[in-house]
Length: 136
Image (cartoon, rainbow, N blue to C red; front, side):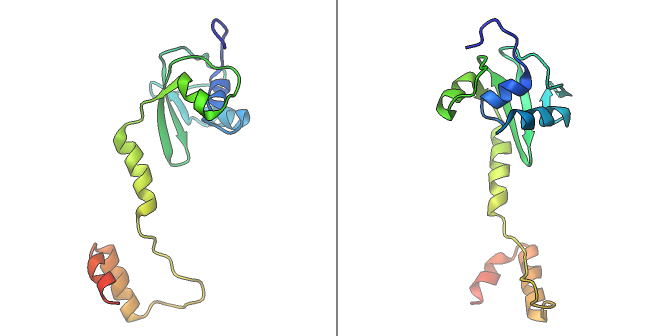
């Protein structure tokens, strides 16, 4: 694809499908969400094979190593051949486990919690959730 050509980081991140559009990749670089060795980089940074980048998208954090240069956007199955995802396992699981945490939300218009509701909420927050589910 792009053997000896210079390739910008924003174009590379768009091509490997890290971002949906190139302008989103450019904005992420400008906002400091793309880093090389802990240093923020400009969207015009030239990508080199073997470099390790940290990309922050919302709460998701990915660490990728460049294995080959890719100039044009390709399908996802092909794109994974141009980088190596070296995100630490604990970061991956912490992101996914966040979606399995109980959400404390009350419906609008239900008023203030009753004394019984308050005790159940306190039990849930204290980690005594097993007794809370047995009451039914």
